[in-house]
Image (cartoon, rainbow, N blue to C red; front, side, top):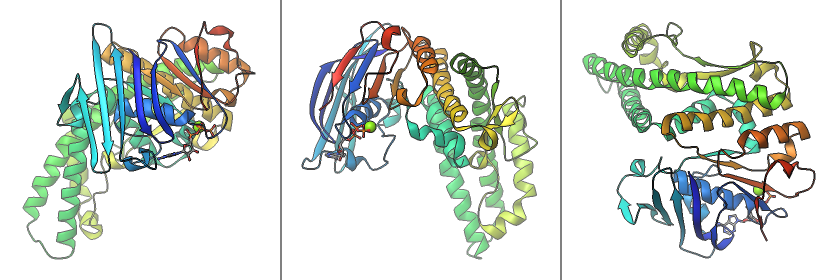
Length: 365
Ligand code: ATP
Ligand code: MG
């Protein structure tokens, strides 16, 4: 899939962009603070209705304006699609083919985009919450069922935690209701976890391959799901996961009642990256961690392709300057001809562009 006609109005410092993107490679070149990342973010927002930099949509509206408007004409394998997002100070609205969608979930997934920026290193180095967010975002993009179960899980978890707090403070007494909530939560959690295992299985295979291709080294990258219930394994069925979660909830009940919160479940699980079977979070070098993060993004491209039959857009923010010559070439040849790619850079020099045939170059000023 690719974006052809693209319009952005009042998006941060970009008052009006109206252009036809190249189906293959688009390069945004410019000095610092000209709007390169803003343009990339606008494309990302059109796809996902959220920014990678902020959760406050108001920040996206140009300083002296009341709204920002994004439109894109999308070409997929068999059809064309018009997407539109309007952000005002009151909220956002979305349209598919000029029909307003009442739910964001029916809009997200029409256009897929994978973004890589220097902050993605945090995915390897940072706290587990970031990796859970990663899984929720990326798997939600390819599966509306995942999106549904993950949202439902958050909702029922909140309900159960609220009730645990009421029991803790003596404002409630009925433990039977806690059983009902625990049972419901375990059911939804099992749906989330089994999908995480499945999608991670796909992702792991492609990530290993991408790492091998870019690093040109003999190290092996593997991805592992770490459940907060140690009895749960990759080969369990959804029903088995449900049973094991129920048992864990039972076992933890006394502590949960004391703390007023749920101690195990998808909201406490983690994802581990291993290089030659060593935890990359602890042992990998900066360059290795960067290559892992990049491999993960490239693996996501394969995942989206595997599930939707279409290659997503690839957005690379300030990535080239951080890679050595060999890795740059390996990256460019890996993506070339597959995905519509957007690359920001302050400098065209020093990058091995010869691999790309006729990119469209935008000077951002
Ligand atoms: P760098 O090379 O440093 O990464 P960049 O070209 O990627 O630069 P951007 O992050 O796109 O730069 O930001 C460009 C400018 O947009 C910044 O100077 C910032 O102050 C401005 N900006 C951010 N939000 C808004 C907004 N809501 N309204 C107007 N301008 C904004
Ligand atoms: Mg930038």
